[in-house]
Amino acid sequence: MTAVTLFQTGLVKHLPDPPISGFDSDKVNSSETAYALGVPDGALSLASLAANIPLAAFDGENRAEETPLVPLVATAKATVEAAVAGWYFYQMPTKEKA
Image (cartoon, rainbow, N blue to C red):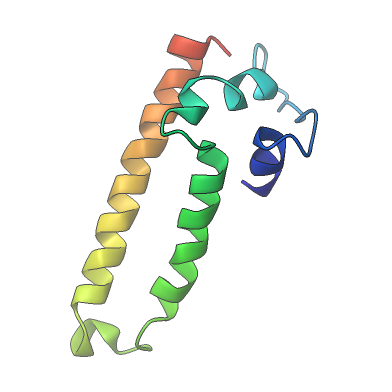
């Protein structure tokens, strides 16, 4: 997501495409969908991924017994992130055609 964020903020001018026919990284990452919340989705994703580090390290190895809310929060966060990723994955071929 760092490369996508650098592209979306104008610091990188082009993203390489994976070897998939019809895939256009630049088009997808500069689409209206990528800015739907008013900020680049790459930056939001990067911040969300960074938040996983303290969440995973919170309260040590016995957190499930000592603070059971922490694994539940991590599970809820992962569920929301999976749903958002699925929505974006759907948007690429249907709306963006790239």
